[in-house]
Length: 183
Image (cartoon, rainbow, N blue to C red; front, side, top):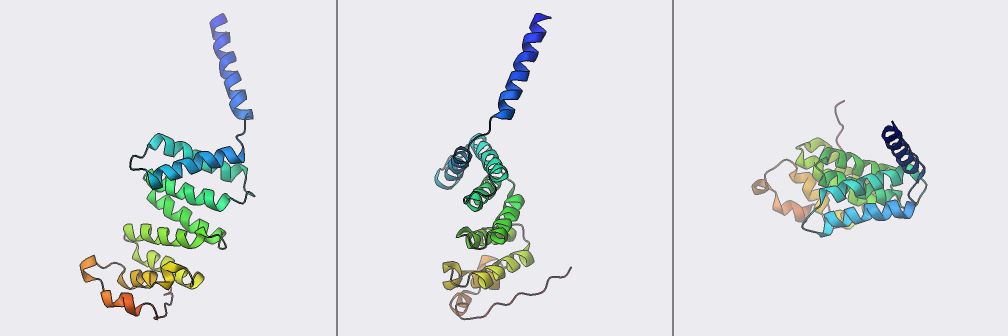
């Protein structure tokens, strides 16, 4: 009986402490950033650390929605999703970053990464729409300025051996228009 009481007391204490303690915005952001940097800079990726970082970023966004780093946290969260195998979720999160934070320096990069993931899924129509959106919203972005976005649009769905290489040069001046999507 005494042992049962001590176990219950320990569990209740742990629940109370974990429920009441709220990690600071800086702490959550730093934990998430560490996971992001592990993904982008290290050859060995520790999935446990990435999961922990992803959870920290999710908590950060939920607990501190007015923080000026939310766009960055969501961007890093998407990277973590992709590294953990949820590439469709990553694409959706990158799209969300580009829509909700259009003035963020990460908005254009989010569209580039989302388009790449959509291509990977062989969803060429969605990838085309994403790249066209990039061209329309961020005409001064280097990926648009150097013709890369237009080149990818022109060659979507083609094997690399069939890519129109002169299109890379021509795409610098060619206008890009969105095509309507069947609903």
